[in-house]
Length: 488
Image (cartoon, rainbow, N blue to C red; front, side, top):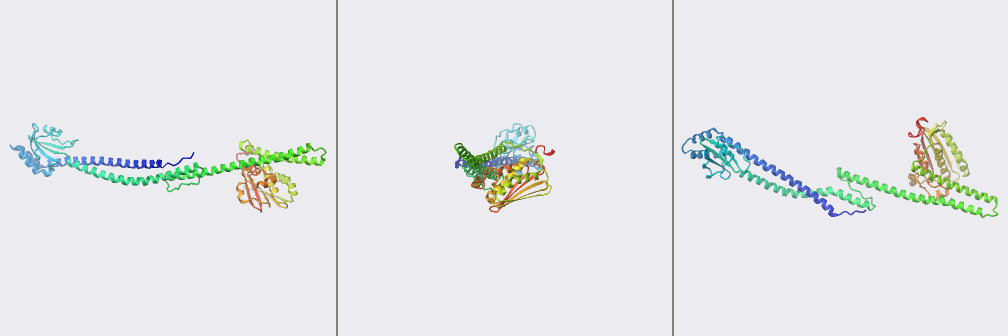
């Protein structure tokens, strides 16, 4: 069934690919944003506590603070000292301030921003017990509380600097995301076209194949998986095209064969019926004419029998029930017997038949009757298709575990275009010529099948108008899978 390429489907694939690419960019930038913000917060927290630890570890400042804490106006003295060291403490009225708290109740006695009340934190509570409170906070506050005499020096940072930097990073990341989206969208469109083009081409090619057009090929532009898929698709299309062509040829040959067989069977049957009816109604027909008519009937019967026998042989080939009777036999004797069988017919046509065999030809393993059938077919064709007064050369020999038999004639030859198909079943080079000589286009096909099942090969060389040479090669010991071949 033919399937049309839907542009909407292609756009859908492209949209999905672009969406996935943008989503990946967004997720990546979100992860980067989270890690950067957390990194900034961690950095400022670590820097704050390191800065406080270094400041309160200053011996001069610590001595001044402890000395001032013992005086009557301690809060004012402590405030003045902390103000003097505000640079070391990083005091900034907007983000970081210091306070002097009374240890007994945590009341604010003085401070850098004038605040009189503070919410108690864990660090303040720790300092009220006499220990230093310097545990990192987990909210929007960083603080440290250091007990000094009856007072607590408390430094608080609201993380505003870290938050401002974090928001600035987020703003920059969002801007980068926006620019990245535009770039990613453009790249995604290009990537989508690059990736989807072979798929679109394959879809169109598949659509064309569904309509019977196998000529469309996909251009392979890369060696990656998509390129391999396109190359595989092209190879599949080529194989399908070849298979379809073979099926068409086989169907053409089958129809032609049925027509040929019908004609070949109808012709002898018509002749037999005609001559039989004439004999039946002959009345006073002379004995010589009756004998002639009976001879025609016998010849036409033999012709029909040959056709049926060839069809039976082909049927056995296809069903796998055709068995060979392997034995070791004298091939030279078989060649001479076949030569003697055709010599009379060749002489009637004025042919010169020469036989030249090597001395002491080896015995071979094979089906003697079938090998002789092959040789008879080749020699009969040479006699049939060689004009009167022609020459036929028969030779044979042995070499490297093989025997060969060659039949060379000076006949009409075979056109070069027909040579590749001479072994095809039902194929005839010249239909009119084959009918005139009684051929059905099955002989060479059957002969070729027999030779191959013996583990040999058949080679035909020919030039139109100059003659044909047929060479049969057979292994001396027969095929390796021949039943009982090892014991022969």
